[in-house]
Length: 414
Ligand SMILES: [Zn+2]
Figure 1 (cartoon, rainbow, N blue to C red):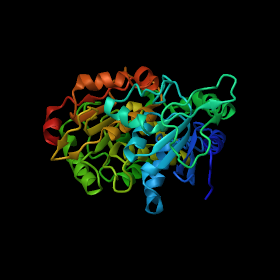
Figure 2 (cartoon, rainbow, N blue to C red):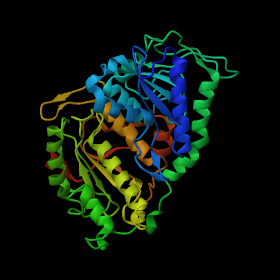
Figure 3 (cartoon, rainbow, N blue to C red):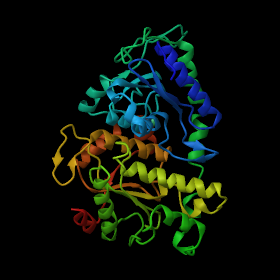
Figure 4 (spheres, helix red, strand yellow):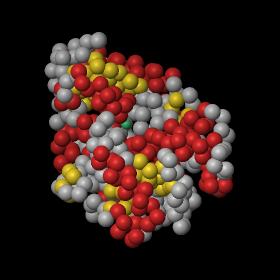
């Protein structure tokens, strides 16, 4: 196991991961986990794009490192004794994941478009006061020296890794982390949104049940296509049994009773999943659905199924139906029927939805891809919260979760 004694040494490992990501034509970001003694536990690059296809929109370095930790945590220190060292300021999804797990963070470069401190002031403008307070004690932005225009004073905790004997990073390391990301950003985002326009989409029910697309979909969710809403983009009471079954399953797998369904542009039920929180506290239902859907589309395209994108459209043309809406109040409530609620998981899911879209929605055809059944906070407060998210989410995607309109569905979930 490699050992590092300065933050610069650790950051150079993160910078090396950005090179690996860049060569794979995905977002050029990378990071590592370091324990308080300076041991490098694991390093990973971003893996959103693999072999030219969107593989997993949530495969950012920090999110993957968090799942890696849970898969290997038996012989590792507690998260409070581990630091995520990352080349780029965490996005909303990764911030939610890191806060849920309880890691510390050291960041090289700011990200003024998607980063949690997009204003570069390290004041966490998007978070509720409660979440910001937790983040302020854990997110460090080390002092930068030697740069011509990269000099910067330290912000946040400087002593995230007690074993580090030097707390500064070199300007050239920050310049690499920032510029290699910026150089690839537009092409990767374009790749994620390289899909068919709405008027070229087909209806998956027009395919025979032995078509490879339907067979592959059924292998991911046995009840796929058993429900179709009466009107497109308008989930109704017919969805109740599918959501309820997964809500119950979620609890058996360590979750809080969440479930997320994915309907296509005709209202066909493609997927409905619970989380897998007994494996990792960040494997919530939405994370499982969006990852499964992206993986399914990638595999079919890799297998040469040319109409994949016609019958399994880009998620912006679909409707994600959350059984439980976001919960971002600063006064966490405990509901006996669904247990303690996690703000940081809700924030992670809002961020992961942004990572799934990575570009403007098609609001003419589908104004509300993010719908929830049971409300868990005031709708105006939620809308105001979303306007304070970093520009990618608030200005470009315009993240706007709304409650479903069908009363039978709302009453059915209870
Ligand atoms: Zn991220």
